[in-house]
Length: 154
Image (cartoon, rainbow, N blue to C red; front, side, top):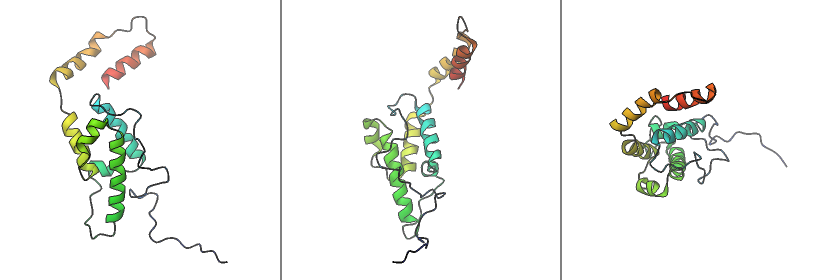
């Protein structure tokens, strides 16, 4: 009985954006709160953090470009893109997920969500700009007041 310590030449390095670990499953959810069209920027930030931690942000921001179908990297790209799409869909309310389900790449889904929900609202921006002027410390401890202020500021 012989054992081999050879390295699989087809193995993907842990540092590669194409690497998928044993905890990277189709049923994974990127964020704890499903995006339901309210609070897009907070949801986007949470998804960006999760994708960055998984070394997959490039699949949504377009920096990891789809290789040509004849490229040796195509199957790894396709598999990982499909996983990222699954994570995105699992992080969206069913109605929103259904509306982007047939887009072929994670980048296209990301861009569609941004185009659809990141539109600025002038009246809302004005209200938010006025909020810092309307809060006061009152009987709150300074840390509580500071947290309220920073939430509005952010």
